[in-house]
Length: 451
Image (tube, rainbow, N blue to C red; front, side, top):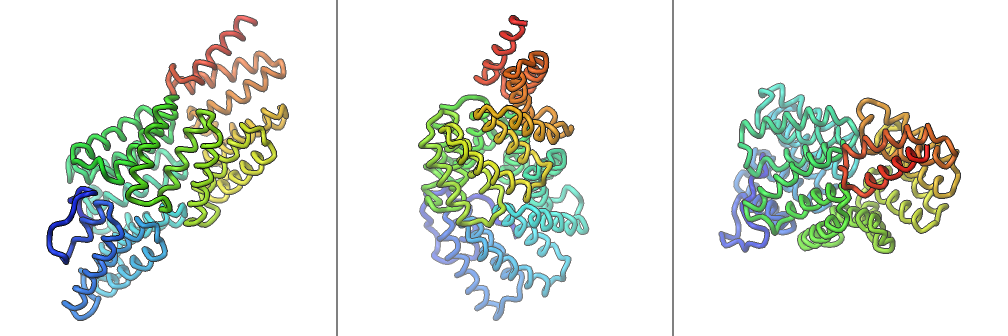
């Protein structure tokens, strides 16, 4: 039931016959999703006219393929309808625990990832893996995508060691079956890159995304939605490493290419708008940051239901814009809203919740409400002292905030202790050339001289 490999360049005209049995695969992987859906409908009609009804293996595949295409278009309900149809036929033909059913369960889980419904995604992906392991060895190619998806779900939940376990299983499975330079390895490299990025290991994540980009370039796929996405992932690393202008240029390029194929109203454009908002915020271009955060929020709310991690990210971005504009009441409202949403979906002890406490602490600091700020930083640190996050850059930001407050309160020893810990963490994650690391080092040196 594989969706197949990339065959057509995204802007390449198809010169074959009007109707073929698998043209929808080629069109879909070329980023031409609407054409592919129409072609899949033709393929289903051909199938029914050939077999007399839908109860056959090919129909299982066509419905699953159509579900994948609707997912790409952001038409999640239609995608789920097609997947459930595929499952019902597969169960009738092969039984409840067949490999075909397991594969569609994995695809259903992928929709819930896209929608930000992480608990449901985890349920379906785990079910898929368990079913496949009942039939195949752990390194069988059928387990590649379920491993990748389980790594994605656990990364979003902040379970980085579990995420890495599944990402490395996927990598080894792909290397065994495809080889390092196969385009079928792209998702493996992407998953590893994003896990390392989420851990604050930005240079390591950057290397995996750069590998993706090189593979796409070698395959002449520079004019393809996957190129846009990978370019944006690389620029996420640039942004964290303090290369704000370079990140902005890359995000703009990725946005333009993605918009070309997806259109400005596609749900995936929320990702590109969100990252443009982050870049403009770092450069203090607040009107542009606000514009893109609002676009990201509008798109997310159009396609997703609250509570939702993607909506929360956009809301907090707007809160940070309002903070820089000294609209502190609005900033606080937005950041508290994001906190509540993250706690409901990712858990009260998640990294995302700690990030929200930091944001709230920053607002109180700007308002000179130092005790309230300190309370929120301490709430963040309670979460971040867990061994999973103890050296995470988010904890570096927490310790930095606490250190700055202690300094304002005249508690020099406590300030210096926290600032040195923050510097060590941020130096390791961001590098010595990052503007925040440089500024923090100067602050520490100044305090030490005065002491």
